[in-house]
Image (spheres, rainbow, N blue to C red):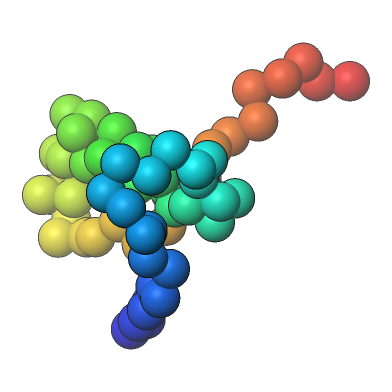
Length: 65
């Protein structure tokens, strides 16, 4: 089990400062997880085997040498 506490706050709601690298990585992980959870094959496997998604990683789809 993990717990994450974020103490970063924005001074103003309309703050236009760019997101930090951690924020970008967290958003990317959330997006990848949502894509995986929404995939019909993933849902079927989870339902069939009673599993859970623990980690989602992007596969390198670049050319192989």
